[in-house]
Image (cartoon, rainbow, N blue to C red):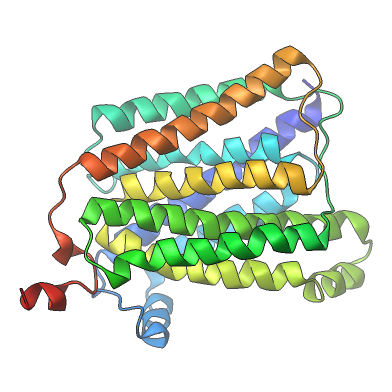
Length: 313
């Protein structure tokens, strides 16, 4: 395996660790806040920005995103994103140790499966011809990103419009925010091309500010973040975070590899290892989604926005 592959995987692991530890910190802070109401977005934002503990978690998430932008400049999507998805294992462990959420047998085996996925991925890295792409056709990018963002918004906001069981709401929040974060990841990949194609601080800053990718990133990330805060406050982190992470990862691997014209390894053995890592990540998503849907929840009143409806029954 070449040195750049080792560096890329290590940096991606750092990004996943910082991002997901930040999520757990946010979850702890949200547990001490009043219920968030997305009908009053300015008040929600003010409440979040006034809480030092939440800001600490948010800063860790930003650090993770910064590391992700850097690693995407020299490693392909099919290498980086499965490593980022390995943060699912970290979230499940921290949910048990820090948040005291019960880690059942299914979640335990999901942790093991994600560890296997990372091992398979590491074994597949370093193949010639698997370099990082930096440019995508704007028309195809729009055709993929716009419908994905709309679907993500509709699915992610669906628990706010009806009264699902809490764990079912967690899956909806997870899938919706995963799609939104997946589109944001495509924008991050687009921005990484500016870092490669421009030289000099002024040209890089000008290129980033004038790029539509920046505004896609900000818009999708802001919408996903607000939905994510409600999800973290009202649902189990051990359900919401893995479903969101794996959904976003699978979306980004499939769409990003195609849009940015990246090549999978030419060696059949290494190709098999990498595809196996992707399949394992998808299996984790399906397993956790079924677990969340089948496990009985405490009732719809735990989801913000449903208390008043319940009182009219």
